[in-house]
Length: 89
Image (cartoon, rainbow, N blue to C red; front, side, top):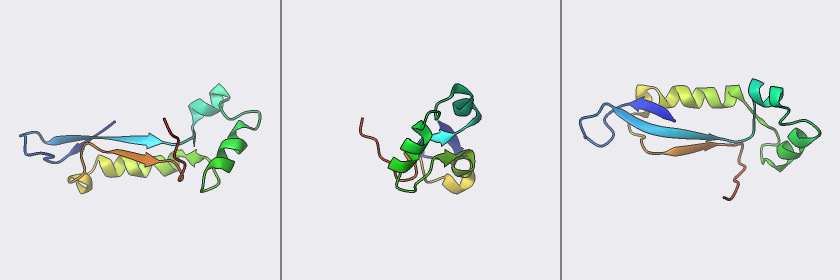
């Protein structure tokens, strides 16, 4: 979840709350855990419309934006950053 500055609903608060729902992303933790070993990474990348796994550099700018004053009009949102892959729950 990202707390962002702004006045989301004129409630007297200066903070809103948003979330990022990242897709399958290559992180140090996922690599260390072996998440994408044995062809799993290639399989997931093949199912993603953009044809690759996410990178930290794909997610970080969105987090910076949501934490900035530029996102003052955005609150209560879950923003999917998943390379176009939508997984039904």
